[in-house]
Image 1 (cartoon, rainbow over the protein chains, first blue to last red):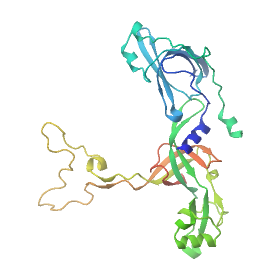
Image 2 (cartoon, rainbow over the protein chains, first blue to last red):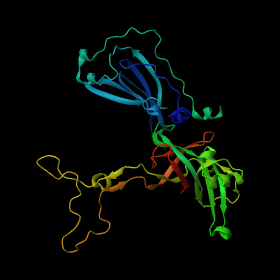
Image 3 (cartoon, chains in turn cyan, brown):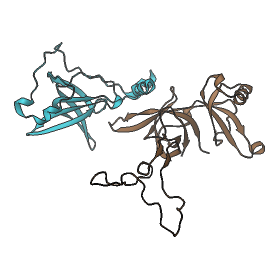
Image 4 (tube, rainbow over the protein chains, first blue to last red):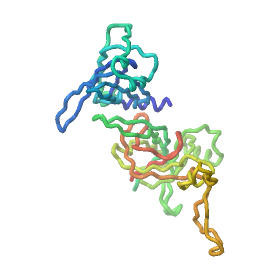
Length: 135
Length: 205
């Protein structure tokens, strides 16, 4: 397995560490390409799951949009993600918060977790793979 | 002449392109391969290169192979395969690695598929099978295999249970997505036959 991991490390388009936990409310700045134009869309919601699949590591963000629940899965190592801001830290006792799907309004809220540090929203520098090869 | 290399399947992962699209890829170690023998039309009846791959402890080899490699001053190697003479500059002892391929090359990959053992007709030939419930006594059996007095035999090629897998399988039209020269590793799009660490041959399309 080490060989697979070392290859994955080398081909990762961005170096990015996860700076949030399941239950946190995050703002994901996602670059959207429309034709030749590019804009940044912010998706804000609760992280209800983090899935580890090596380079395919992803996280699911859930929000309520006009009374409709919307979930979006973001690949963590996608170069289209600009930055991930943590807005609020939530208290969660399990790794997957799928029970939130059946809840509405106040019962779908998580208690705020008093974070270890006030510093959240660590931006992650993107390193192009071309630079890596020269190292 | 088609370039060919012997290699090893390492495993699968995803390759994320610059625009964010994700491609499923198989990590393959290609080479380094050593030219062990050059067969010629005059001497052997046909032209071919015999490539050797994968270092091995000397005592694991049989004496004829060991002595042959020793005579040619080559390291002990485990796997051998004859390929076309794709480069006339290659001599016995020259080492080739994945640098002979470039990114975006179309290749075909030959390997030995995973063995499935003695498999029934549902797994082996995709038969539908019968009902499991509602009093059915016909579950996964093949059913009728032919007619009666005429022709009084079972036609050749009738699909029946038997050994499945462990076949030599070639997958064509795969793309080399990325080459990591220092590790001798190529990322080939899609799946390739065989289990992890199984020996494969990658041939230019």
